[in-house]
Amino acid sequence: MATPLTRLPAARLVVAALFFIAACEAGPVQPVGRRPGGLLEGGGAPVTSSLQGTWQRTLVFFDDFGFMHSSETTWSFDAGGAATRTIVTTNHTLGAADTSLTIARWRLDGSSVVIEFTAPSPGTITLEVRVQGATLFLAGQEYERIS
Image: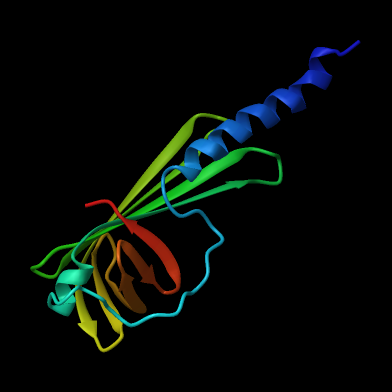
């Protein structure tokens, strides 16, 4: 006869599978790889307009204790050179979440985008960038256009 303690792992597995299925509907989930293609494809539009918009990537994973987590990163690039990066990390098992917002400026430099962070801490990063249809490849990671 199953005791409550022996049923717990099975219940946890069912809940984790449901979360995983729901997360798969939200866009790319790690691991992802590089795909061949040009730098920026804008369908005849100026190169910078291909990058403009809001892009999102969601990672779902389990920690060493079997707790389910997700990390959702959203980049927004506007026509005036402003950018924001929002990261929402969630522990689905415990029901806890945290949000981080970073404000920046962006510009293209060849096949890279230079992002100069202004708040909360200044700094600059240069990342390889490519847009293919509704997918942004930023430093080899896939993001889906959401607006």
